[in-house]
Image (tube, rainbow over all chains, first blue to last red; front, side, top):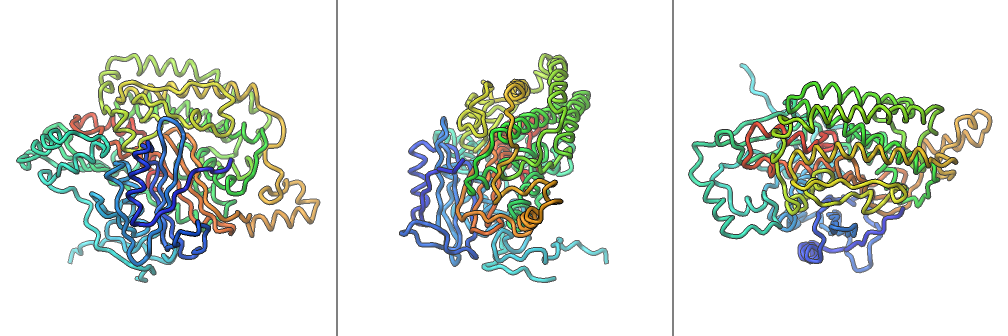
Length: 148
Length: 442
């Protein structure tokens, strides 16, 4: 079984308009919002007119009833990792956008509650970034008040 | 303490606390009831007016993460006015172990050992979705028997997962005897899994290119024995719960959600089907051989907790129907694809052939090279759409492995189900969402 989903490529400027137009086409269920950090794999295959950036925000949409799917790959630069939110279109994008922010540090402009969702709120760093070290970070504890 | 290495560190996160209730804007209310619902402006204004001037009457209550009814470590921040729940905020992450990051360190051969631990009540589905995504990148065609074995294991697993739901749902609502019955039935299935895969949970049975081992002698009798046992037990469930007035009063009309809301909040599985939307990936986009078996997609009509309970009970019966058909039609043949790139040689060959030993060694040390690309594959797990988005850079490890856990998305419907309900019904609502925190937090 090969994955034959239609893929739309976009940049940050055209992202919200593209998702909005797909929603108007009837893609009514936001299946997933996630991201990929292409720091160590910068030369992945994309169409010629797409400028490759470090991050990609990947959105999967589904058209109900039916099975038609579409995938949106939005190129997000590392220097200014801010993307407009799509929670105004899909309320269900709330939690996954928070997860992307938590794991990759990509900010979603206009998100109602952009806080860490999986990691502790005082955690430093964004674990799913490729330059985030593995296995050599001591467990972070909140500073407990001392008795004396 | 060593500083983590990362670029663009930003630790100025706002805290996760709820804001004051009268600070709730109309926009926030709109989002809470599903952004695409398009509440009329007067409704939104009325709702936001209602919120004003109540700061003295509301109370914040923390429920969990160690509450027995929260299925693990779900924490809820409840805002109450008297006995009525106004707002709910699920706070998750207590079981986060970085499994997606871990998935980038493990080779494709090790990947399903990692994913199987996510939804620990339905491990076969997690293995299946990872393997299907990898096979989609590798372009591997499965032998018929492997497909049907996978389908058999998944349907048995769906039954055992729903039996677990029956147990916990009963326990949460005070039918403590139900807990014992549900676990007892489920244990029969775990013993079957043990006899087939060697393990009761976290099987690592479904592998890329097929399954780990052929079905053992006597498997058919074992499955048949369970299928004979189950109908009478399900009738006991009906007597104990479905037809019982206390049970019905406790669940009917509790946690109602409309189809528009469920779709807007990305709910799938029994929650979406309880609202009357007949969306089941086994029917809508048949994978494995689901287009060759007969079964019904069970839908509800009210979208309440009782529908979600009844749907799962009915799905057990549908899965039994599918398993009967699988038993009749299980094809003979190979249980894994004979493709040297993905399949290790049989154990016996390693003792007698140097080439087989080298082949085995190379496969397990270097791993298989998966062509660069990306793939998203989705299957219908007992909780909804379970998806796997794999990105490969052509090496032996996934570049990125994203698991779309249905519980993670289904939890978003919880605040909506709880709104304006009684705090006593909170437990019924949590239970009917059936979240598995291992999958929520990954």
